[in-house]
Amino acid sequence: MRQTSLLQRVRKYRDSLLVQIPSLRSLIEAEPQSESSKPEMMNLFLPSSLDKQSRTLILTELIQLEDQLRFAQAYESLSQLRAQLHSHSVVYKNMSRLQPSQGMYTKMNALQDKIDAQIAAIAATYRAARSALLQTHEHGEWMNSLKELQDKDIRGISE
Image (cartoon, rainbow, N blue to C red; front, side, top):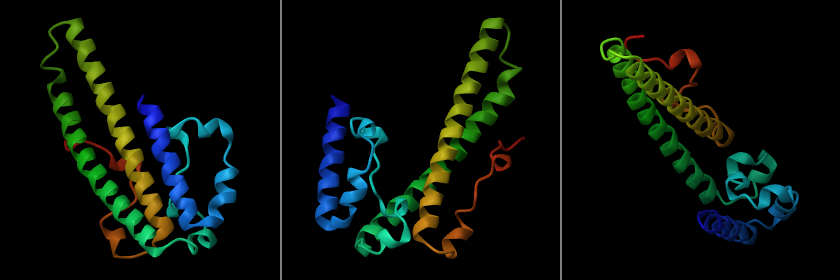
């Protein structure tokens, strides 16, 4: 049900995109059919995913709208990353203290693994948002607050 609803919304978005930018028709039609039935795999043809020549055909309002969304996505990802790193630190500190049994040890390890997976997903979201911003923006003031996130930078307070 959700997938069908999402598929309809993506198709409606693409139709409106074709009205605004008719030159995208060849790109949309060139997409493999296997991906066109899975809405989560469909390309949305946002300005950041297009080359510079195709981006010149897009309304500046659409580019600005994506920029606003990507800035919000990047800052929200950083906020979520901080919260998950805090959770990671709390679990790590209390892990040895709260392990009176093998069962508790297993549960704590599972919790640690879950938090680590969430951290990796959030980091990937941040990197995708920053990468999209690099496509539509040249170097600027925003790069001072949204720096490149490397794996060595992702660690808890006490690590």
